[in-house]
Amino acid sequence: QDPDSLALDVIMSLYEYWFNPSNVTVKDLLGSGNMNLIRNASIKEKLFDLELLYQSNTSNLEHETYEYQQYLSKPIFTHADVDKMAQIFLKEHTAGELGLTVANFEGLLHDPVYRNGCAIASLTSLEYSDLFRQIL
Image 1 (cartoon, helix red, strand yellow):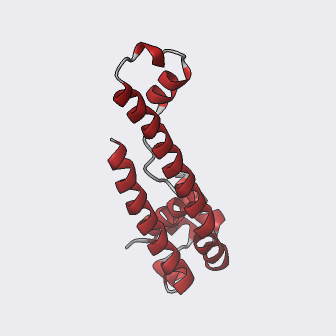
Image 2: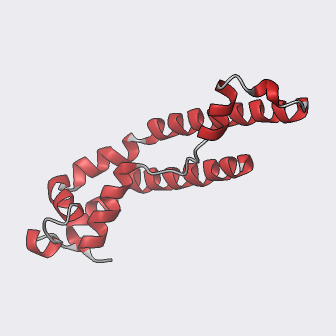
């Protein structure tokens, strides 16, 4: 992989993007006071269950993200020049302009803490994406 792509990937690993669908419509309905307009008790129950499932999934995902965040960030701050990678991320400079090569990323990419942190982050994302798909 080229150093520009590596820099972008490393910075993106700090952002911790995860699949989190919106539940605004259900939340608005539940909080609107209009639930009495729904006469079917089963539908009402499913809507409340849906909100509880969403809250549970979101809470668990936030906990997992917080719990393992250190395994991504600490090795990055130890082995990488975040300032230079940020300049690449912000499209202010290229890796070549900053003198970054693939060799500058070797320490990070071979750090077992970072590698395992990436694996856990990926696993967590996949696990909770599947749980949120159950909601949909």
